[in-house]
Image (cartoon, rainbow, N blue to C red):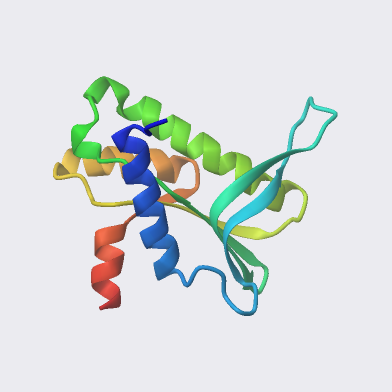
Amino acid sequence: MNEPEPLRRGKRFHKIVQADFGRDSSDGSVRCEAPIELVLKRAAIKKWGRADILITELDDVVAVLEIKATDWDRIKTKNIKKNLWRHQNQLYSYVEKFLEIDKKSLSAYIIYPTRPSSAELYKVIDDYLENYGMLAHWYDEIATDAN
């Protein structure tokens, strides 16, 4: 079965970002595709999610990074907040365990390939995620800063 191009593009982007984070660190502090038990209020069964990147050895702080290959310049205006809600909701389902059960301090990030070309759209994305205690990072800027 052929995968749609957006899915292939997303998988390629995941591999690039995870490789830059060192895949899995030798001390286990950085893990890619790390399983996380989800906190379900009404379910009697355990359910698991998978963090794209989980960093655990930061004293009492845990960092959860979600990788999204979203090209915000191509998203229709009417779908921007719907996409943002889906992204933050997925990430929040991962961080809830660390906040509610483990009582850890937490940093939550979504890594996108590039900043949108519109300053107004950038502000919408940044403000939206910030309202949920999350930060957007732009991979092309992170990669440039590292070089």
